Length: 140
Length: 80
Image (cartoon, rainbow over all chains, first blue to last red; front, side, top):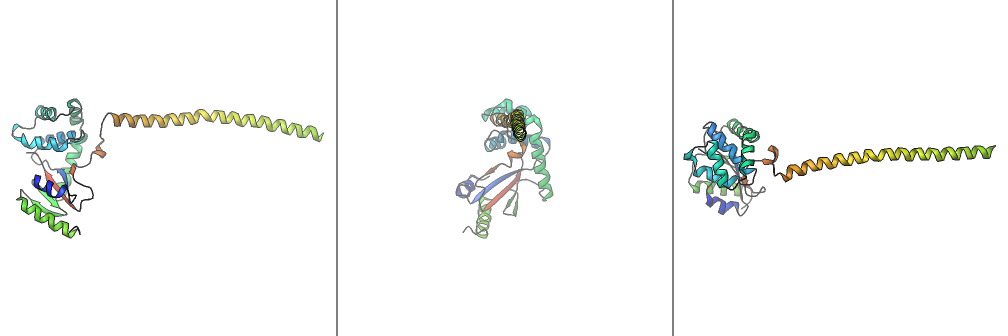
């Protein structure tokens, strides 16, 4: 997500950003999503999330995902246990199914107080929709 | 005769009281067992917490920002 939105709106408590996994490109997408949830269990979801984006061209083999976990400073033994446990795969796949049920069919897809934006957008588009949503919510 | 009956009644009452205390005594272990079970449950919770494990339900969706924010942006995405 655009850092500018974080600085402008998250910090002043106007905006909350929520992540949903939508791994529609297959098993490696699922694996990356599961690894990120294993990082979340250790309080480092967003750090790991950013690292996944930075290293997406290296692929998401288990070896690469564990190497990223080590780089992120995670407890790799616990990370591997969580990754293989299946408990977070259920969460990732549940997110995916919910997205499908809502009609999401590609990434990234955003909803802002229910208004949908599909695909990458200039930051100005987000700002306008956020400002409109804030006014509608009575927040000025 | 009536004095003897009163005495007999008093003795019976005293024995009955001892029996009650005995019952109370036998109830103490069960209270301890209950306390032990509670402590055991608390211990298990403590172990889970101290191991840092986060249950599936507790993990929730990754998010940034206040839960009370008037605007919520939900991003559906993957990493590829």
